[in-house]
Length: 468
Image 1 (cartoon, rainbow, N blue to C red):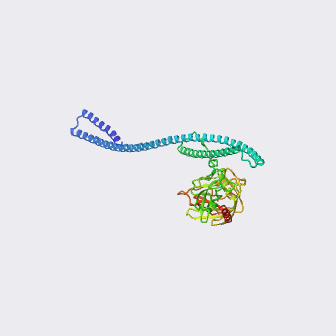
Image 2: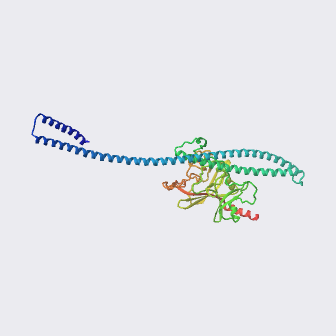
Image 3: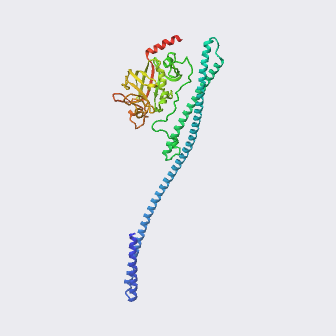
């Protein structure tokens, strides 16, 4: 640019000088050699200006070309980034469409399950009403039968009474079968609910607002309350040959750990896991290994049990009470840390019924774990939806149902399971167990087991011999 300006400044001067010389030559005749040399100087000056102008133009062209190349490179990079972003946007849109389709299918299934559940409930209610009427008729017939036996002791049972009894038994079996079907439908409904909640969370992460949010919302403070499913429970029929607990099964020669059916006195038949150890067998009432099962359940589920006997489960307070009320039992707590070291503690204990909120009273016998549960005190069982007086904040603060006294502590085997991560502190993995001396333990797995005391086992053996 400087060269161009110089040229524009010099050119008029040269032209003006040339013009003046022409006028001068016309007015007076000067010597020709002097005029010729003056014109050559002007030409040289003009040529020099043109060369400088050409060089300046060349530099300007090169600089402009370099800038244009840089702009084209940046445009190419921008185009590639825009293409990549467009591809990612298309992928996200496809995922969004797939999630919407899946959500719609799950909503339809959810509605179907709900409708089936309502139909089953209505049928169940009608069957229960029919059962009540039949029971009233049976009681009336029993009174008549009693009178007949009283006045005619050698007469055979009336055929009408027999037919009614058979009919009532058939109705009972039908009702129990229907109850199992209803429980299965509730389980499927709960699974559908969990799937829908997971889809909703994915949609929220992609910024999509679903119109079904209000209809599918659930409590955020605790897991969804589900009807108690009576874990592994069988029909309430008479089985005189079914043992009362795992110790009886062991004494019958079945000395392998596994799932067995038992029938405690004045109770129905249900399945338990028998953990066979050297010389005896224990009934497993609680087991946690990896945190795959959420233990922050309702009072109803803690009462009747939940989970899978082959994995993580809680047997159920009502079933535990039906076993231990038969005789004196020992409670064992087994903990395994992350170094695969195992520890245990044994308690003699007494467990109350549902009217006492299953109050637990402990006395330590032996073990290699520091004292973790209060002894000689009444520990009351509570959950987030069933809080005993004086223990209102324990289940909410520490998660999961447990036996509490006047102070809440980190000694809840049903609390949240902290799954190990790369950045998690080792002492916060698994289940945290804080002893009364303030030391914090981290357990990978836990077991709670019961079996009769030695004196009770010997009595059971003595009772068993006459039966053979």
